[in-house]
Length: 116
Image (tube, rainbow, N blue to C red; front, side, top):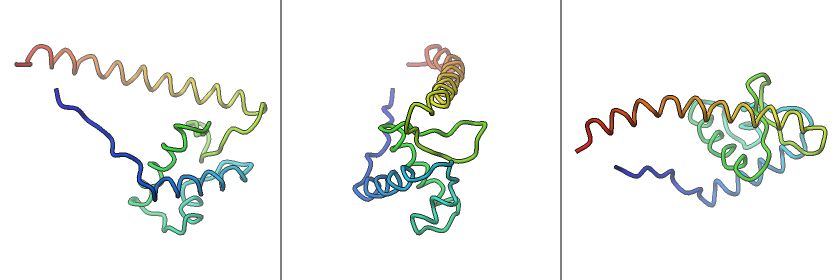
């Protein structure tokens, strides 16, 4: 079976992630992607949207980044007032994992049936 790896985060992406993290730490309300692109000096378009999502994913690997389906934008959990929202985010992630597992099963079954 082939191995799939995501590219490592570049130094530039790390710098942008740190810059965006500091910006998000100052925000009280959720911030939409257009506003974050403008903060980074980027035009908001599909190419920059993708770059921004990569940066946000990397922030979310080390900091409690909140982006639930029932709210627009992203924000960081900062204190005990955010516990319920953190729990909501956690449950949404668990549900996505469950849905992906369900989609994975038929692929595994097919692979095992036809692998050489």
